[in-house]
Length: 213
Image (cartoon, rainbow, N blue to C red; front, side, top):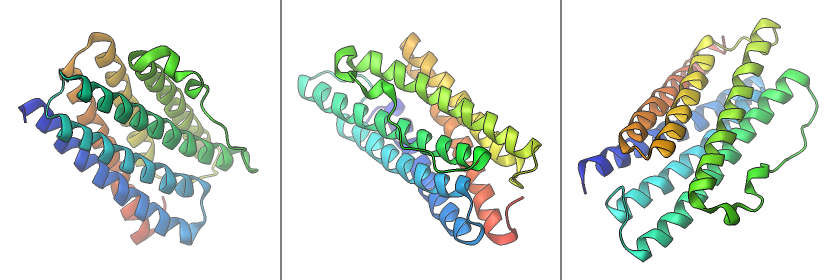
């Protein structure tokens, strides 16, 4: 496996592991504090972890960043579509959790409009749209987090805000990597995303020990 693919695979596996741990600890803390945000994080990061495992498996299967055979292209098309869809749903769940914490009530399930007619726009267009939707959802999460903190409705640490800012920056880099067709930018994005996941894991683990801040 070429070095670029190996790095992508390793970072995806590490990010998946961190995401699943974050989901687990968020679930444990949520059982104590009953927070809409932590409940949404538990579900959202479980989905992200599963999606990243699938994405890592795709890299392992193809063995390279640029696929060459028709069979590889079909496999990568399906796997990438699945991963991007899971990713959007995960951030949608987290955004709904923040909306519920901010405004109260039970938000109705919605499906990202980008999923409608996705087959018609092709993988490249779907990738662009999925990252764009993820950016909108992450921006919403950060804005709602700011409202919760400024309104005194949450004791959550600024670490959470930093985590989602890092994840948003990672998706900006992902979007730029697709536009520029740059594998180097994609690797940078994966690294920044890993740091965002890791900082959020630090928060939920600490919350279980000393309580949310």
